[in-house]
Length: 91
Length: 232
Ligand SMILES: [Zn+2]
Image 1 (cartoon, chains in turn purple, cyan):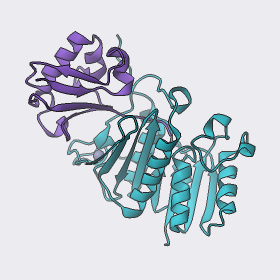
Image 2: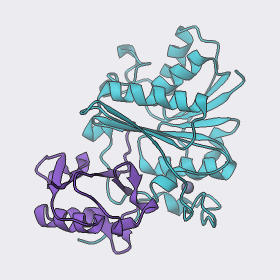
Image 3: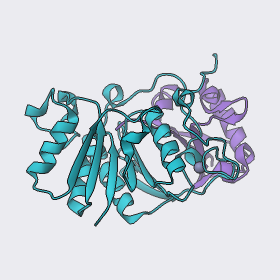
Image 4: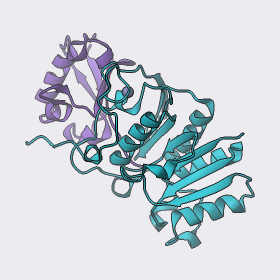
């Protein structure tokens, strides 16, 4: 089992086009991002700055925004889905 | 219905939103745009015909809605919403933010909050789109969702492309949210998975716009540029 990370279109250039990445052995969202970085270098920088999650990106565990949970320390469980949601423009 | 709606941008989202609002019987539509119709717009900007290519989007929108015989009073206002030109929305009861760029989205969010007006944001690119309605009474607001403008150049629909029906769905949802006043609701459509998600967004206490000690209390033009890109 693993957590499933949904990758938004702008970041799929880092995942070889994959829209989902499975991450093993992660206890928190922070762990998930570290594991993502190992698999797909550059991901961490796209998601985080020195203050935490970048201001125009939301990270959801299931249906919950981690800013309303424990932030990067939010626990994740096997089988859970993590969504990365960047602001989009266009109309 | 004695409602006046201001539609910022009469493109892929603004066209279906305007049509839906007019057909729903809103009394007045303030239409704001500074662009001309391009042939590449026609697949999604449903009020325009081939013969409209090269015309002002406002003129073409007004003609199209008039041809439909709708009674809605149309109030076209050429130009853009800019920090110096927020008066372009004067007189509206609700704002539909149908623009194609972050600066206008954040500016419209701030103008709406500072004036106490409800706003419905819409965005669409490639296969995805979102609509989000914000109350005039406060949060959750667009800055609860996204705190600031992304750095660097953005890929808009002119570069990244957008599927026409995604715009149609999101623009219609914006009109729907404006009429139902379903504030705090974020609707996102993933056209590749055929998934429509409806989330209730909580207000963020630390939000710079609607939080408990807001720092955005006036329109400052310097705020509507992308945040500094980190050096890589
Ligand atoms: Zn807010």
